[in-house]
Amino acid sequence: MVSLLQKKCAKKINKLSIHPFAERAYRFTNRTQYLFEPGLTVLEQIGSGSQQILHAIQKSDSLQLISGFEFAFFDINNIQLDDSIVLVHPSSSSQAYIECHSWNAVILKSLFSSIREDSLGATFDSINELMPENIMQEFFNAKRLSEEKLATITTKSRGCIAKQRAKKKRLKKSTIEQMDAESVLTMVLEKLHE
Image (cartoon, helix red, strand yellow):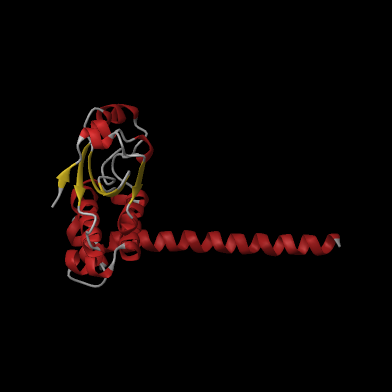
């Protein structure tokens, strides 16, 4: 049963971290480019006035977050537990429960309502790389998210997503080729100096 972390218990918490089973959802959130990026001082001021709602597993004097990190301006180093609403889930929660809860929060609460249009290709790749297959099956009824499915969800064309992914691959390839050319040049110069 989920319970509210009491203020007196919040004061005893010495460590706050991301639960290992929520780590992939957390990494996905950090990779995603949102419509409104942190660093905009007016928006940060607005965001700092609201209470954070965090979901966590409590282990003696530490909290392991399973969601709450998907919200704008989340900063694990600046959480004020006294000012937050912390819902504590049972420490016996299964891996499947924690993964499902964290991905549900990331996908449904933030991703499709505020993702930047020009980052759909990168988002597609991140979802397929980081989301566990059982969660993928639950959300998208498939083992992998297809470009067509993401296009339908975001009301964009499949071609838009494919072009972004192709551009990213070209940039990555040219960077690798540039690095290889620099390595060869460095080797030749070293041989000349011997």
